[in-house]
Image (cartoon, rainbow, N blue to C red; front, side, top):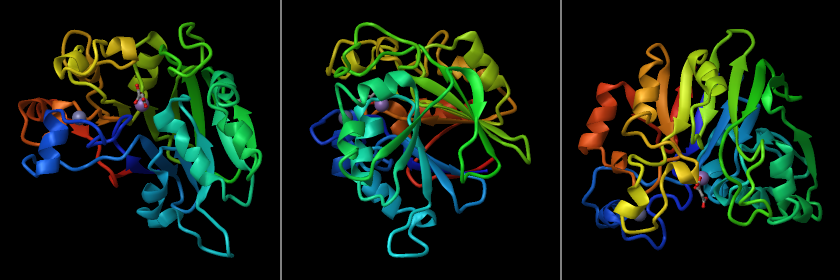
Length: 304
Ligand code: MLT
Ligand code: MN
Ligand code: ZN
C-alpha cells in the first residue's frame, strides 16, 4: 500500500505564524538544517488512484495541489479523494473539511460519534457543509472492529479508542469520552501488510501495544521530545501527556515504546514546532537514528 504524508507538523505547523521559539526563529533565518512542515494529514491508497484522506488540515489546499495522484483525471470536477477518516475533532485535523466544500458529491466522512457531535455543535463544520456539498457520516468502531470503504479496493480499516482529550472548543472538553481520539490499523487484504496510524497517542494501553506489535509500519505521535517541552520553551505550563501526547524521551516514552517493535518501520509524525528533532543536526535526531526511528516530512512517500 502507498502512503503519502501530506502534512507532518502538529497544530500551528512549522514555522508557526506567531512563534519565535528556537526552531521557528532559526528556520526563518535560514540557520537550521530542517524543512517547513504543514499540518497533520496523510493519504492512503492500494492502487494509487483511489485515496483515503486521514484528517483534513487547514493546509489542505496546498497539500492536495502538491500531490498529483489526487488531481482531477476526468470530467470538469473530479478528485482521487474518495473518503475522509478523522482521528479526532481538533482544529488541525478538521478545518480543511471547509476547503472541500466545492465537492460535487457528498463528502464521505468516517469518524466516531464523539467527533461527529463536536463537528455539529462546538465547531459545526458538518452542519455548515450541509449548505454546500453535504456530509455522509459513517460511525467507526471503537473496539478495534474492521470496516471497508466503498470505492477503496483491497484496504480494511480497524479503529480503536485512545485516551485523549476533546478539543478546547468541545462541549465535553473536561469530560473525556471514548472516541474523542482514535488509532487506526490500515490493512491491505491482498498482502496482509499493516500500518498503524496514531498521530495523537498519549498512553500505550494494551490494545494499542497489540496493534503496534502486528504492524509492519508505525506512523505515530511525534509531537514532543520532552514531557515539559512547552514550559521549557516558555510557551505554556502544560505537560505533553496532559495534552494527549506521549513524549519521545524519558521513561515509558515513545523511543522506549518503539524499541519493542524491531521488525517494523518506525516513523514519527505530527511534530510540534518546538521539537528539537526538527533540527536534522541535533543530538536528539541522532538519538532517533540510533534507534532506527525516522521523522516524517511533507511529501514523504511510504510503500508498505
Ligand atoms: C494537538 O494535537 O494537541 C493539536 O495540534 C492541537 C491544535 O491543533 O491546536
Ligand atoms: Mn494536533
Ligand atoms: Zn515555534
